[in-house]
Length: 399
Image (cartoon, rainbow, N blue to C red):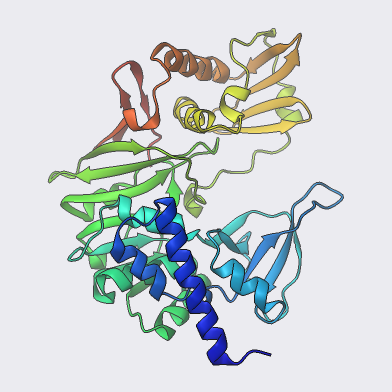
């Protein structure tokens, strides 16, 4: 049995090891952020979390095992200081960490983001001493604590739509001596009482840039957020805000995904088989198969976002070997079926969804397969466009 003092020494040792590993990986190049990682006790912000078991259950669902200090102190502390995202909530249900239960499947709705990404986000947003920041998505509060350690608590505002999550985070923050401004609020609308700020950093994703965010950022200030959609295509963008509320900036490289802001989450679409019965148009050979946007590659990750811009209301699901696209807004649908080594496509509804996806893929190939860093996002009034000099302009949905 170790003493409390010995446990604190071990936690400090693990913080030092984490900071060193992030520095070696290039995730914490700034000494000030490395020092924040050495100082902030991440384990205080994750009293419990879930880790995936080695095998799925009999239904093919991921088995999520609860991890707490009481259940297995060594495993809990080691995971707390690993460069791993720790899931703390599923389906909006707050766990009882005194009597946690194993979960089968479910949609994560809150987490403590992996430290390398947290530090990378603050660094990519060019956050430095003297800046005031608004964080969208407090989550566990660990990211908030790092910002407080670097900037001072008075410069940091953090909001979360989940009051129970925020209460837990606030207790951990205050227990560690950090006193940022905290509020239960929807990141879609920012937080007007603290506006304007120099930086806005989102730990959730949006279908398009919320107008409130550009309005609440000082001229010359920056917004770092992840764009996502119902196809689960992601792109990170760093916007610089002009004096008139417009903004522009590049997409950033790398494969980063965040949970959707709850108001931007994809709606349920029912049974794909019901949608398939409406596909009365004759089948044709697909010019491109779905693997172009579903493969486990950085290019497919990027392409999925570009394709999503062309069909912003479509969702995708695979049943067996058949891939379905369903658009609940227009009533359009697609069914892609393997055929003679390729794919056969049938479409229905007012929009030919797969035709639109194929047009984006063709333009992307013709442009030389440009990486995300060669694209820029322009935000002006109610219009948001993803621009590349050798491709047709793509639009984001109205937020």
